[in-house]
Amino acid sequence: MPKGVKVAVIGGVFAVMVGGAGYGAYNIVSALNGGGATGAAGPASERTGPPDADEVEETTSKFFAAWEKGEAAQASTYTDNDAAAEALLSSYGESAHITGVTITPGAARGTTVPFTVKAKVSYEGKSKPLTYKSELNVVRGRTTGRALVDWQPTVVHPQLKRDDTLVTGEAANPPIEAVDRDGAVLTKEKYPSLGPVLDALRAKYGDKAGGEPGVELSIRHADESPDTSLLTLSKGKPGKLETTLSASVQAAAEKAVKKYAESSVVALKTGTGEVLAVANHRSDAFNAAFEGRVAPGSTMKILTAAMLIDNGVTTMNGPAPCPSTATWQSQTFKNLDGLKPDESASATLANGFLRSCNTAFIKLVDEDPLTDASLTNEAQERFGLGRDDWKTGIVSFDGSVPASTGPDRAANAIGQGQVQMSPLNMASVTATAITGDFRQPYLIPPALDGRQLATAKGLSSSTAAQLKQMMRLTATQGTARPAMATVGGDIGAKTGSAEVDGKATSDSWFTGFRNDVAAAAMSQQGGHGGDAAGPIVAAVLRAAG
Image (cartoon, rainbow, N blue to C red; front, side, top):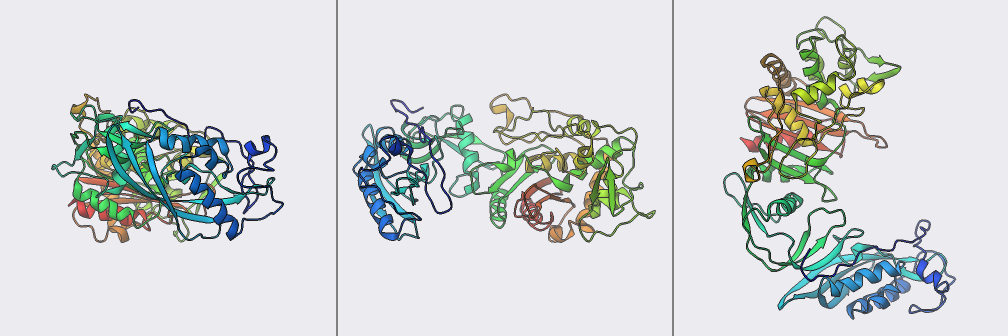
């Protein structure tokens, strides 16, 4: 925590009653003081419905005027949460040391008013101008009838969340100069989706990289995630931090995910586990590429195929009939629409894999010697998943493949049920599948802090060879062919579509390799694996050379 800084909590009081569509929240504090019949905003009104243009203009004008003067208590009376508004607006001057505030409203869009804040941040003789844009909404109190600012932390700054705080002082951690594997400097300005990653690296390694802290205006997050720096008053001395990233691959990853909503991708070196790129295109700062926990769909069939081969159930050229439906303990599973069933002698595991036939895998999961724990054992012992022992350098998820009974045992085999993965996990699965060796992914060399990387048994050379060949066939003849058509070299892939409760479309998943680089992506934009995630992976693999 910055030295000498008092911290006020945003949203310390949250007592509201939510109104209907177009209505605001009832001002509890005003009600306790007599129902809000009188006050700074004038006498109560019997009016109902959304505030009109005149009310919006009057309320925002009074709110902005009080905020500019640093009159937190007065400004809070024009909001629907007096206590929370006063606490944050008070800390704006006291903890964040922001003064000289000038607010310029833009043209209202109904009850929404955009505005620009210009101010100054001053601390121990250091001063910098501060400019940013935000917006607020004006709502009507259901009982008071007053037009009020709908209080949200984003009113004060667009990056604030509930219970976050604004502070100015000596930074909690020294700054870092993160560099890629070839020494190129990595910044959030050039690689925007690296912002949360760089913040996490600074929080963990800032004091190990040899830097000295500067003075900053920052957001101190209530969820204990790394501080977000908003303005640097004095830079301090950055320490140099070497990463495994590749600037060129990262640039391609950033560009690729931007084309698809809610998308993430990871690329890594198959022989070492070194992460070459991590990119997210999301509406929040969550690093879903490393921390996501969602069903991976049919990309899971890589691991399931390994289980079938390792347990002697079948081989890539062994029988795996693909009927139109398959029933497992009273639950009926189907294939994707348009997939032609095949129960002939040519219906092999490789054929079911490249066409992504669900029923071919489900028909085999009850074969001896398989048990409810067979897929879990394969994931943990051979692919290093689900043991909570990965140490990548930042927070990451190790995947989860729980032993499941009933219909979930079959659903797990096709990447549904209780299985959860991130793009990082699936890139690692691909690397293990094609090399036979599990190499725990990492972003920061373990020598920096003496981390012990996770280990696992890996696969036999025979199993790895079969998986690699099935992925090659999928990329050149199967469901991954359209996405991989422009990727040269030794290539392989697997598509996936993951159904999500409450969503009309499936999540799109895709994992693949080119030579010695593996990449995996998922996109909530939806569709088949090759529709959104496939082009992302292909673009990253092309850049990886």
